[in-house]
Length: 231
Image (cartoon, rainbow, N blue to C red; front, side, top):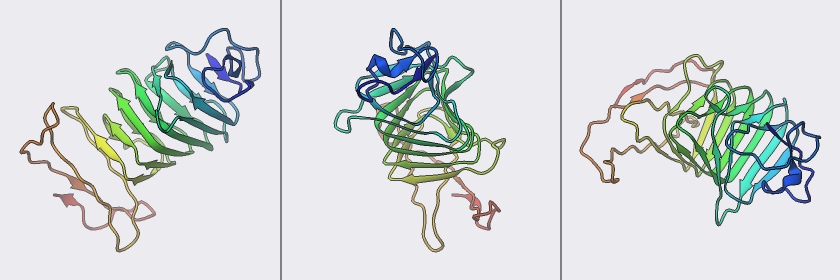
């Protein structure tokens, strides 16, 4: 386990003094996190990803903390999350505020980007790539702005409460041969949500294909409205 202490002279991921293997206030670690090391945030933090990095699960390990993770917008770095705890690559506690921007989040085939717990998250100019799924497990507010996502995106029926997911200028790509995309959006009365879907071959060329899309509409209280169907 690596805890973020933030005790270094800067907020860089590569600054060893920002890390401890004992606690969020413990002695400085002797090495940076590796693929077998889960990363724990237990207090407010601002982290700058100054180099490509790999770690195990990223865990917001305290309620009501605020964490920002970013990298250079001109040359985004990659944070590769593997898994050492079930299938979670990310896990959020209640009341957390998460702001991730200008970087690449990658996950392994065994790790999923999971949102569990009541949190408010904003992902801006983030590429979320990898073989794992992107899954919302509980009621929370998540905003994706100008993001690219690949894989399977869903909010299981077992999710505790309805998540509020907002999309602004995002691209979603699913190269899986099977799987569902639960696409949630927000619009005011009289406006619309624009969704464009394409079927491509392995080289990215369009294919002639019939793509059934089921649309369901809900009001602010979660009650289904008339207008559901396939198109």
